[in-house]
Length: 174
Image (cartoon, rainbow, N blue to C red; front, side, top):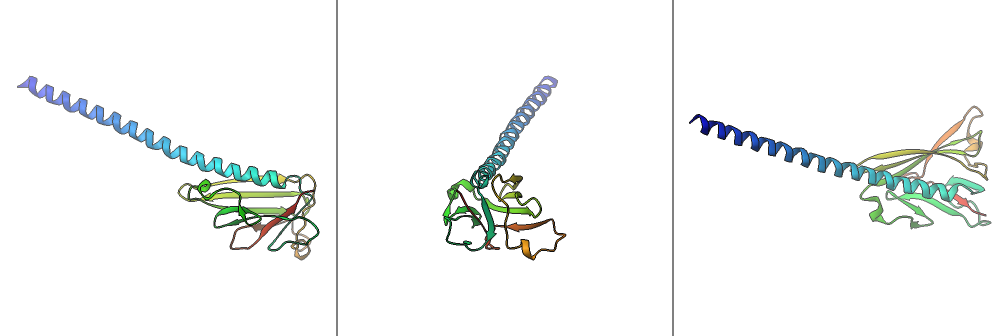
């Protein structure tokens, strides 16, 4: 009888060990999958950042407005619509690129430097991710209609190019 009880306890112990290992292994698999998805959103955001950087880094003129400044140049427009980055009325990346997340881009322009912009990129959805980037543009002076309307003591201004603001980044390349 005692031997039978020991066998039963041993079998219960082994069952709990197997169950514990299986649960731990399942947790690791799920945890790795979650981190994989977070890293995927991070990589997608970094691709957006690289695209914007490559588009703007050598531009001699850049402005933030809701309409093309003039007809003298072939203006390009970057903006966010429906949580996706657009260039000249065409999505830069396919809808599947965003994996159900919505992109937002905010920026801070510095009046005195005239060539520095701090961007903040956000991907919001199942996994939220945000990253900042300072862009020191090499060939231009930042120009904006806000410059003339700001008090002399103002150092910077905040803007965003999200669809609710109807702002776009207009730039051209030489």
